Amino acid sequence: MEASQPRERRPRLVWAVFLWYLFSAGYTLLSFWLIYSGSIRVSPEAAAYLTNLSPFDQAFTVLLMLLNLGGAVALVMLRKVAFQLFATALALSLLLTIIHAFARGFVAALGGAGAVGLILGYGVGIVVCIYAWKLRASGVLA
Image (cartoon, rainbow, N blue to C red; front, top):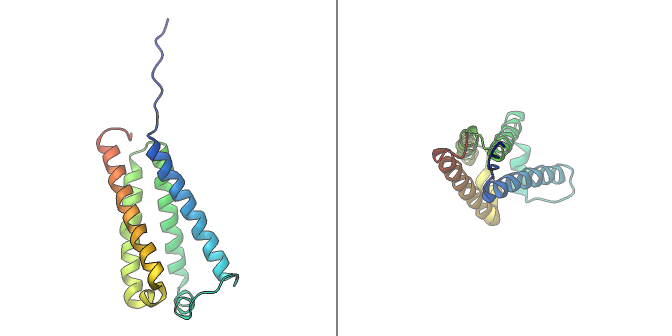
């Protein structure tokens, strides 16, 4: 009789990260749709900021979302590339935020609640990168 192999179990936090990024992408898409369709109002500063976004800026935003979703899927699949995808998304997001802060009026459009959300978002991104790195270093990610 052949001994059965123990089934690999994903850490629960892997599922939490996956669901977080899935929810985040959906929320972002819904938010942009509601804003651009005129269903919700934004401040004049935010409206000016959004109007000044180029197709490149919008494509870059989609790229960041896809990198994060790719990282989340790779994490669920327990793949080492998850760390690189999350880290790349975080670094590019920081770069884009800095550029927009100086060149696009991002700071004025952000407002107080937006600043808190931005800081929390970067905090989550950093924690997820550290988590993926630790999983990779411990051999959980193949």
